[in-house]
Amino acid sequence: MLKSRPFSLALLILGLTTGCTAEASKSIAPQVISSPASLPSSQSPFVLAATTSPDAATSGTIQQYLKKLASQGFSEKSQGVWMQSGTTLLVNHQGTTPLSAASLTKVATSLAALQTFGVDHRFVTEIGSTGLIENGVLKGDLIIQGGSDPLLVWEDAIALGNLLNQLQIRQITGNVIVVGRFYMNFEVDTQKSGALLKQAFNAATWTEEVKAQHLTLPPGTPRPQVAIAGSVKVANTIPANVKPLLRHQSLPLAELLKKMNRYSNNVMAEIIASTVGGAKVVSFKAAQAANVPQSEVLLVNGSGLAAENRISPRAVCAMFLAIERFLEPSKLTVADIFTVVGQDTGILDARKIPTLAVTKSGSLDAVSALAGALPTTKKGVVWFVVMNGGSANLEGFRSEQESLLQRLSSQWGAAQTSPAELSVNGERSGKATVSERIN
Image (cartoon, rainbow, N blue to C red; front, top):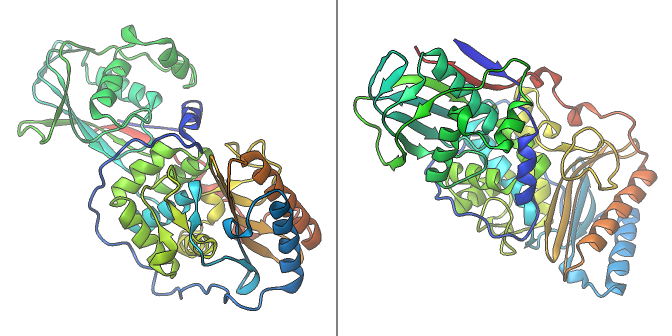
């Protein structure tokens, strides 16, 4: 029996508590993954703009922007700007200098994940048992085999609990044994994630939070009743006598990345980066795919929660372009991976960024960055990267970034509709997680 449903955004908002802040990131051990997928043979590598001979008029506007920041005490050496339209360079201010990237790191993580897994990859969690089912009682253990799903939440666990009920399981005499990379509700501690899953399976143990998430599900969704007598245990191997019961498939990777980037969810980013192979692997794969020197992509984690994460403005732009080119065969664009201003809700809701820009922001205590694609009538799609640093001036940097983009959008003509290369693929709007019985 197959259960497929759209994901409720209600709980993803919890990711905001781990968004663009300077909080310490939870440690997640990297997973060794094979080398990244290459571009289809029919595609030629994209071409970055040359670093010399920028557009004089645009460079003049940027110089005014930098002088204003300098008058406020922020050195021009702490700022980086790169802009290009097609292969035409518009601005290069410290474009090849690695600067603190904050959550622009997630652009690198997105690119490395796409190269590694592909847009339609789903992370699979499997549930099995070690005993027989008699009169509604599973006499044995429930085995959870994690598959690195970064977005398994209450609603998914409730669906799985209801499937156990459909298998006539209402009691389990043994333990919940968790094997592998299992995460739930953005909790990376395996023991705690297993405890959350156990709680979700039994409505009698629900907190108000779980009850509230149940209300976001379609009317009439049952409340699972699976009472588990034992405790949650973490194991290194799967028992030899396990019998498969259920399978849960995450959203496809493209949709996972869209949610990660819209809310700048650091835990999701760290899980995905670890599944790729860790920060060093992400750094290597992203630089290689973007065709920039490794020295321009220096990462210590996959989320951006460290000032030591440093990427050059040119490299950020190159990574956006590499993602654009990688998505083309799947009829997707960067708008399917990042926030479209004015269309997508998320952490950019309060920002005054030109409508229809496709963007990713980054913020730390003394760092603010904004990058993406700006559609215009005179210059077409302008790829931009603005990286600011120097001291704790987050709101000031953000305000100046917004003013700069609004000014350039006015000069170049604001697009009234998204061009094809920045349009969302509406055919993927029905993509959902899948929970199913194996037998």
